[in-house]
Image 1 (cartoon, chains in turn blue, green):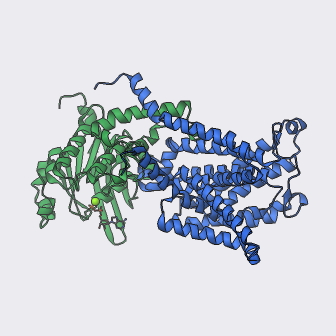
Image 2 (cartoon, each protein chain N blue to C red):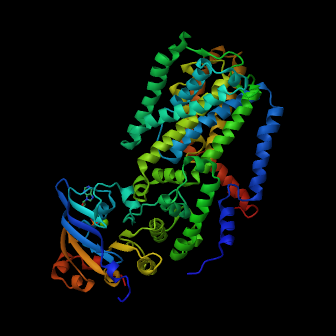
Image 3 (cartoon, rainbow over the protein chains, first blue to last red):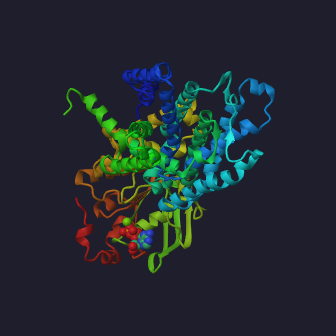
Length: 364
Length: 273
Ligand SMILES: Nc1ncnc2c1ncn2[C@@H]1O[C@H](COP(=O)(O)OP(=O)(O)O)[C@@H](O)[C@H]1O
Ligand SMILES: [Mg+2]
């Protein structure tokens, strides 16, 4: 059997394996980075930064949900629990640990707490992923819901919130959230932290999905029996998916406390777990683009709704009282609409449009 | 044969000893014993519902027989899970194609490399050094050894679910080959293929069995008698879960017991050539 010279082949495969294969895509990504890290924060005022932070927080949470549902086929309806574990771990570490002075001065407490929060939430998620070894589908959904209620309504509300005798909410005094020399005390700084974390986690997930671990997840999603006969320890990889999803959720939760004056269980209701699932349904299941499109869509639509309700408040004052109700109805309607008319989500439309323009002017 | 392999090829690689399995009142396998020698193509034939697929499922670990022992290289593997058996060198294809339909051809075959890859979560997340290097090495293996052999270069980036049936069968074989198994279980690899595809597939089976590069022992479940008789070293006949005979293709073909088992179904199992 004859072989081609290795070097030649390797170069070609390396090119084929590159994340961004064409110069066009690389330029596009560069422009995106310039926009996200430079133009937008220069231009945006507090309001727009706040909206962007909300989008980023949604992305951070939804990445884990996408990993579980979209890539590993494990439906979860309790992801807010892991955001909560992250937020509380980080908060408690920052507030309760007697950090040595040099660490406080160097602004290390919060970064360390983010990492600890990620591991805590990852392990907690792994624990609630254990039933996935035995049950699938409907029953697994119920056990993930149990994660929500056990974690937030029981453990955090009843016990964790009592630590330090502060009552329901942990308030975060100004200046406690500090990374290096930067105190995260305004929307612009929160924005940069968000942008950095979103970039890191997105790269990590995209890379995982194109290597051994991610392929095993997708194989389990598509056909778990075949996956097992191909040498995949299915239980192990499902648990790994729960761990990584929880890990990302922990980072999301720990990030979000930088945007809050006080942390309380109400920040992590069950409806937020549903919301995250809605985000990937609307954006597109099994697509990283979908996470971004879904988060943008949901947050922006909700903001527009709020603005609309505000402007109508003069005419119909009772509408203002029902803002939450209006939002939840809109959320439900959006999901129904997408499931009926665009079941593959926004990402699929985007992909179609891209193909259309790639083929242009020969498109038909 | 006069090759030095003769002694090795006489070795039994896989053996079933008095294996029985019931599904409630259905006796799917009754006291089935089978010895598969290294390097051979060993066919299992029998009418529909005879228990051939159940037999393969027992070997690959998807079903646990209630009685009997399954040995690989003389060691019992009854207690092992399917993925552990895959790691010992047992690969398979399925009667009803079981590909990862949302993945591309290349990714399906890459998935078959799973146990030969070593990058974990951390190095995968960064996709630096080890992972990137490993992916390229295995890509080269897949391209040069599998895609070339099975002549599927033109569809390597297509999503599997959209491919015609015959090509899906081929990709499934490719995915099993990616494990670099020592023994491969083929469940009706020719079913539903047209004449030309049957010939291609039969050639691939011979290739992976005979080529020095592969030398894979094949356990072949197949209805196409013409191909079975051409390819097989040994044939094992099963009816209602009960072994009826085993021997060379010629012996089995002329056995009255086998002919009787197939009585009334001749046309369905006749060769298509
Ligand atoms: N999971 C199962 N549960 C119950 N019965 C089964 C199962 N799998 C196979 N059987 C039964 O076992 C018998 C053998 O089936 P099978 O091995 O699929 O036949 P074939 O020889 O055509 O491949 C059939 O009667 C079938 O109905
Ligand atoms: Mg069968």
